[in-house]
Length: 373
Ligand SMILES: Nc1ncnc2c1ncn2[C@@H]1O[C@H](COP(=O)(O)OP(=O)(O)OP(=O)(O)O)[C@@H](O)[C@H]1O
Ligand SMILES: [Mg+2]
Image 1 (tube, helix red, strand yellow):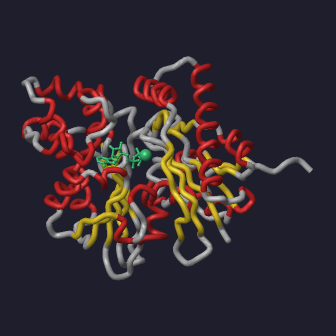
Image 2 (cartoon, helix red, strand yellow; image 1 turned 90 degrees about the horizontal axis):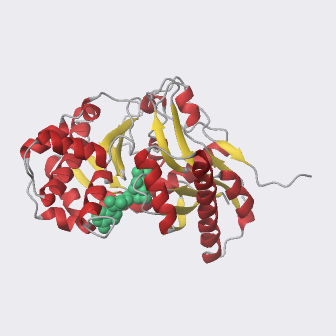
Image 3 (cartoon, helix red, strand yellow; image 1 turned 45 degrees about the vertical axis):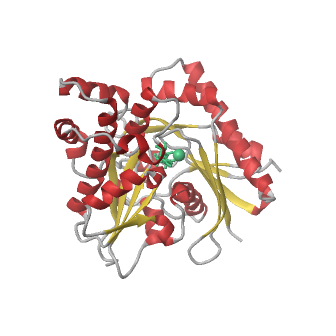
């Protein structure tokens, strides 16, 4: 048996996804998966830290530990619910919570918190974390890291495929049928992050269920063009981004630039249109020959977003990764279980053609659960 656990909490801060995965067979088998909600105070503290980019160092240290405990408790809960002994698990791959992603800094870095010592100690399972640093040291973006997993699981020899993850941020993986052509991929821009933040300004819920609110809004063409002209969307790949760039401040600034009144609901619809358009344009620009597009991440549940994407890519089959046997909610968590396996097998986790790193590298660092002998 080769059981691994993947832990993912992404930019949307919608919860902690945990997947229990068996890699002993060809492909993989998802044994169990669950999303555990954040404690409300912890969530609020994380949002405040990430969106402001500022905090007292003591607060950062506390959040790192508190989140480590939250991850560990969620993992232990899944193990208890599935009656899986900890000793059956080879390793945990924990992405952590990105609090700052800075690939263009003088010393590029990507900071994830959620203390992995706590996880190893509380679960008794070896934990691999800090996946992005090495790739960045090698000149890469440190993101996206899921394409190698997409390649391992979703490649087809018959069809050119694209996997489009619509989480907080959107990213695509281009999987050419011809294995001679390298796999590529990059962040396309905002996924749900702006939709969620605008929605939260006007409602009590965290997101616009099935795109209901956006549905009857009107797309404002001037605003759409202004949004699509953003330098990140125009920038060539490789590229990556995060919530420190695409956030409410960004949106407020764009609204000020528009300099005309626009209904809140139309803002939501225009943001949705921008998200779908930026993903579709990225696919058309970099992978025009694609036959099939499979969407994963929470955006796959937004029917209006999915329909807009289909309308923008009429020559391609657009569905979700469920068609390929893996529900869209668990792809990212499974990817980090897979990256933990890559680490334990001393295999690379990054694809240099994707991140721009100078070479393929073993990603992550081990937080051992072993007791001293
Ligand atoms: N039924 C739904 N209708 C509309 N939107 C949904 C629905 N379910 C989930 N979402 C959207 O998906 C988001 C969560 O997606 P996901 O968990 O993939 O993102 P994430 O945690 O930010 O991960 P990452 O950015 O790393 O890919 C929610 O915040 C919400 O915007
Ligand atoms: Mg999530």
